[in-house]
Image (cartoon, rainbow, N blue to C red; front, side, top):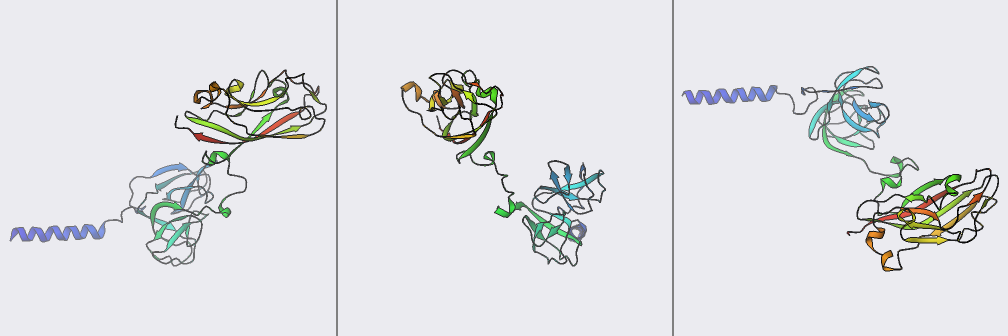
Length: 309
């Protein structure tokens, strides 16, 4: 009889506990909050995001969502927020007039959730009956957004954002002093790529920005070359720049990539792998241009190969 009584008592206590316990992951049930100084006013239950310039703030929707603000705070104040954790439920604010329960929701630009948008964060548990109502949102842990043209600002993707096997681009400025010292001090076009990697030169386009008077070249040899290893390695290509370097107007020279070939010592991996490529003057230094105002720009197209060697 006593055993039966205790079994019933334990069952009742378990039922009471289940009914009164807070939802797992609900932002109000968390005992630990993170603190940051905000750069702008933030309302309670708004999503906060990391802004690279101003720190944590309710910044643009392209910034990284960090958590949900526990209390409202003025600009410059210290806020408390619950760190977003995958698979948990948070109290959030909606900026839509109505969102049904179990509806996919997105991150809004004002730190609220909405029924449409670019970045999907999860789905609602409750229905939102009016604009700026609060309710519970299940965060699924994946900030999903299709990468389409509308999401990318023009001219913002650079070579560093791409896989290194895709064509890379480097723009290198060459000063007047550097032009006149290309034999003694070759100009680096692409840095050494790292252990086991090889730079393949596709092309190099040189732009001469003419100044007040012409440059002068010495007697032969007077060619420019692109070489590995600071000008001491294999020569990928060489080209006669007479008429280009001595031009009395702005000028352009397009150079094809060339390749690795020749003597056995030139084609070894040790001679070419993990070496930079440079622009080198194969003869005497250029002179002239007393105004010292003629400069060059090199635009280099290349790719990097992982050799496995």
